[in-house]
Length: 330
Image (cartoon, rainbow, N blue to C red; front, side):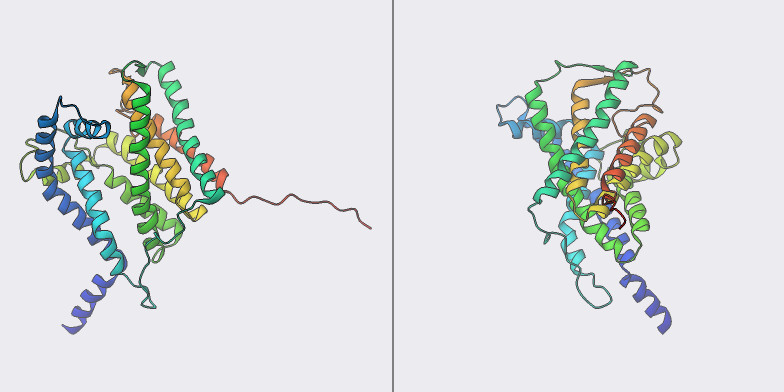
């Protein structure tokens, strides 16, 4: 009996166990809260529809009105993770009983190399997706609608959203969680494990409409559908694996540079492209979902161009060799 007690105690003291319980708690809180927030958000959007609002407020109201339950679920989960992250970090100690420090104490000034990594990451992400867009247009998989909305408004909204999301998610995933995993796992295993978790968190789109998104049980119904979705080959290969590759590239960039600037640049570029293409492109309904789905996260073609971006990041972060100098023999 005493041995069983110590086994259970050691199990809950294990960092990986605590990390798993932390994720499970975030999922449960999101399942409970998201239906209620969904109802409030839809009512708030309906009450403010047509009113003369400030630009950011109007954009927020439109987003709340368009968002489905899965979007509310993911936002609640991310907010819960951020709120609980500090006490979670404080509860962890290494073998020397030293508390884990959150990566907020790293210098906020990127310096020359940080600004360079941020810029290069953004250019690589947008550049390869831009090439993919030209290919999609050439093959008539998507149709451009350049007059869909004012360009200045789309650029401002897309950049603001992309930069905000990338900073928050990179701090949580590649900043805190990656550092925690490195304390128990080798870098390769930490990158794979974190990328699986990253893909799963972003794999929150139900395969069919929720019967009643306003129901108190709607969040748990959504969780059940997400679990079933892993058995769908098209969704798993075309969506989950692409998100997994994105996670691998971001974690690899964080590991090789030691900072978050390169992954923030990459993440910002990808989200920016997704928002801009959502505003100015229409997918041809005859296009196979295996090739290209609803956005740049879905399909074999996005997976290929994400992989090409990863290859570029590999060469960018590869250690630079000093030039060989030849001296004359005496």
